[in-house]
Length: 250
Ligand code: NAP
Image 1 (cartoon, rainbow, N blue to C red):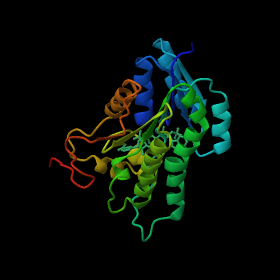
Image 2 (image 1 turned 120 degrees about the vertical axis):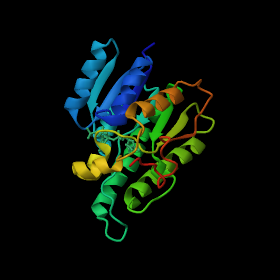
Image 3 (image 1 turned 60 degrees about the vertical axis):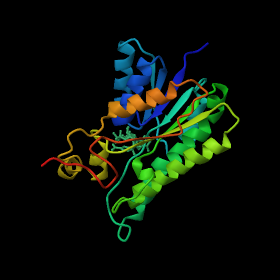
């Protein structure tokens, strides 16, 4: 028998890298995918040196032909963590750039669709698990969130619909919806490299969630017995009661 294998998208930073580390520690062979080949190679080297099995594979989740070619190289997939994604801008609907909306839809929605479709045969053979990293933005909106919120709502709909469609087949569909997670790149990407605006997102919040906190919930959810499907897990820091209500210390 080959080793239980987890494919993680967006494993080059933040939640994806932390999830790869924790799933490797839980005994999974991890397949690390992201566009930045140097980052996933370094993580694979780190995990291999620690005695784990880790394989990097550079991949843009929006490139369907590349995703299909990648899937054809995978003999066994027990877990797919659809983590690649992110936000671009905080412009209101009235003035947002449609190109930003399109880019967010491509990665957060079609990226999930591409990987899930391509790996579903392997996941079914393995009685596996699809994880969708959505967001609390998948469940409620906020001003300036429009394009990201729309995309994450669509990711939520993929998880909900897929779970209905796969009922009776041996595949679980788990959605993890994090609130505020302080990662190195998420806010920086959203604000196009503006460090001050990125830092303001977390200003005064004593303990935002960390990438490890979310990796922990992903690992917990996928390591439940196979008949237990954690449909949707909303995880926020204690200081955040809704997308709007965040306690900030002066
Ligand atoms: P992050 O550090 O910016 O990570 C995003 C990851 O996605 C990177 O590894 C990036 O790798 C990858 N990625 C982006 N576009 C890609 C593409 N076209 N193809 C393949 N990989 C791509 O952000 P994070 O905070 O860890 O967020 C991870 C996920 O959690 C995202 O889906 C995000 O929307 C969601 N989330 C984050 C928060 C938060 O507050 N941080 C809250 C809720 C949900 P490359 O650039 O190397 O491709």
